[in-house]
Image 1 (cartoon, helix red, strand yellow):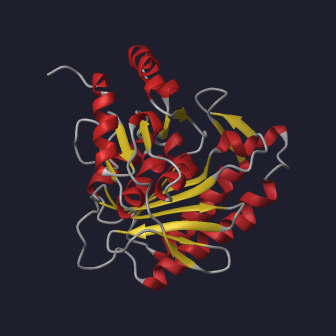
Image 2 (cartoon, helix red, strand yellow; image 1 turned 90 degrees about the vertical axis):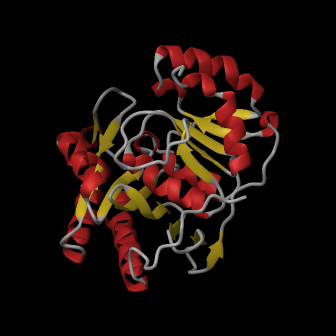
Image 3 (cartoon, helix red, strand yellow; image 1 turned 30 degrees about the vertical axis):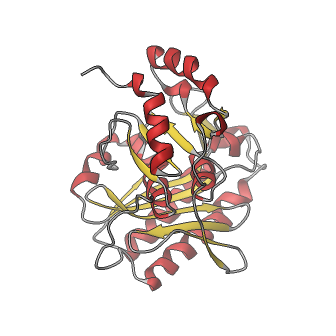
Amino acid sequence: MTNQLPMAVTAPLSPAQKTQLINLIRRAAKAEIMPRFRTLDAGDIDTKKDENDLVTAADTAAEAMITRGLQIAFPHALVIGEEAVSKSPDLLKGIAEAELCFIIDPVDGTWNFAKGMPLFGTIIAVCRFGQPVLGLIYDPVGNDLIITDNTTPAEWRTRSGRHRPIQTAVPKPLDQMAGYMHIRQMSDDARALMWSKVGALGYVGTLRCSAHEYRLLATGAADFILSSNLNSWDHAAGVLLCQQAGGKSAMLDGTAYNAAMTSGYLLSASSEAVWNDVATHFAGLLPEA
């Protein structure tokens, strides 16, 4: 059973606007991201919260280029980038009320990028009043992307221009599931519970890159993602891609996800059955009624 969002009467962007968006992302990767990959100087890398939370010259330059392009193409839209939010957190308050909002993560997986690991991506989500209605995850290294909106199934667009539908994995038992959980970002009590529960699963890890974690989930190579860090630039696009590829995304308590949310546990899974099994297994994360 799938958990796709109800089909909207009209798509959030026209085919021409989608193409314009994709071309903008590719140009930003070609001009600002890939030339800096494995060529960063020490002065091109800075920390935000701690040494695991990095920002590079590629992040800021790519976000600036994408933001400018979107503001020109969609002058009435709210455009929010991860790096802009780090300087002006109040920008997030506009997501819930914006009729059209673009949320940008210019280089998701910055730690990987800064260390020379080719596991990073660009994430773009389009939201209406916080509800994701278009999701795009682009891999600058492979020059390909997965994309969907709330009127179409999710698909993979290769560098050669081929369009291929994608589908989440078939359900499997808990002890055979592979997933990603960001345990380090959880509270002390939650971490203790998580470590006591992960042994029942087939594989648990993290790629330090939401872009590729959601790509693997949406294309059937992973079974779930569980996170308590609800940065909208990490999750909004992936939630929609998961759902439109046949999976289910919702807060662990069953509440529907909205990009304006800032707390709670978000679970995305390959199917409703897998979502239910994982949610039951980690139900102890929720406060007692």
